[in-house]
Image (tube, rainbow, N blue to C red; front, side, top):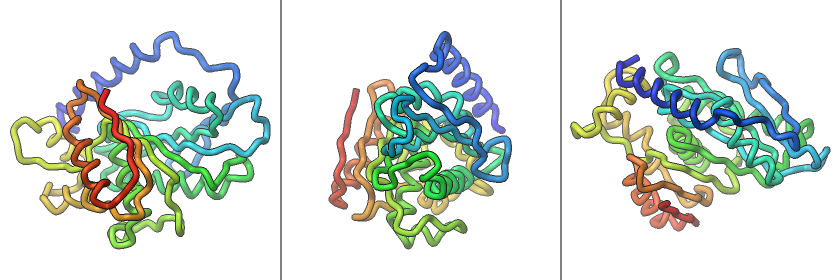
Length: 259
C-alpha cells in the first residue's frame, strides 16, 4: 500500500471515530448482523436493518455501498447512517466489500453483485419487496454503485467482466454522494488520486484501464434514475456535472444537488 493510502486510511478513521462517538443503536429497529454472503469470512459480510414495528411486512429495500477510497471502510462505519434509513420504513442492507490493495478491481463490484444475488435469494426470509429496490453509494461507494448500475444496464459493458449479473435486474433508482465518474491521471494536482489508483488497479495504469472503470463511458438509456449529491467542500465536486451531462444526453431522469 502506498504511503498516501496509509495516510488517507488514518485520516478517514480519525474522522469517523469523531463522527460516531457517543452514537447508540436505535431501539426501534430489528437487526440481523454479520450474515456471510460470500466465502471470504473477513470481508464478505452484511447486516440487515428493519423497523421493529414492521414485523413481517414486506418493505422496499435500500442497499448501501460504503465509501473509503477503495482502501478503507466497512459496514460498521456506515451502520448508524443505514439504521437511520431503516427508521424511515425501509429494509436496509449494509455490507462490507473486499478492499485494495489486497483485492484489486473489480473485487468490490463482484462483491456488490454477490450481495444483490443474496438479496434476491433471501427475499422471503427478510421480507424484501423486490419490486422496489434502491441503492445509495458514498464516495468510492458512489463510484462502485454507478459502475455496477452501468453493468446491469449495458450488456456490452457487462461482457467485460467474468461474473454474471442477475437477469433483467436494474435498481429502481440510485443515490450517489460525492463520487468520481470520469477517472484520469494526467495532472500533478491528482497525485493523491494516482496513488489510490495504483493500489486499486492491477498492473500498469493505462488510459484504457481508466476508461473501463469510469462509469461516465457506459451510461445507456436503460440506466436507473439518479439522485446526485455533492458539496462545496467536496474535492470531487467537478465530477458531478460531468456525470449529469451524460445522464442528460441519455435521457436519464436525475436530481442534482450541490450543498
